[in-house]
Image: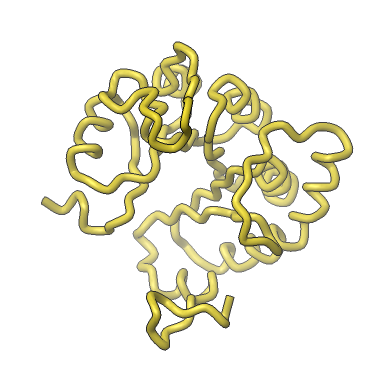
Length: 194
């Protein structure tokens, strides 16, 4: 994306290698794999058989290149994605690379994917966290139906971390921490400094 600028400045979006060079080694990094070759965000929780195989083929080169870049750095890394094919491909290329599956609309199906690929982390939207005031709130979906699953408890029972996205306020972070999440993905890096 060297043709895109940061917030209308002349500064281009950095390459992964440039971003990792700028981040101190002691800082953990969550690298989200988006859909290669497309700006369209879409979930892939319902891919099966040939469709999943084709998705993995599309991800193979991208994943190999990204993991080669990551290997040159000492940061603790978590690769996360909404795309099952991305998670599957990371597991095939480097089974030791920690992965986190990004959830969207179906807790039960997402937990199946998390278990299938033995993901170290579960990354749900903040309104999927039962026990928080945001649970089942229609922020991301018009009519969410997350069933009656305590996602944090289910993940913790299986030894997985829960990192929620995307927070804008300290109040959200505080309430979700009280509900037991392990990490937060925020829009503003200084959100929790105070």
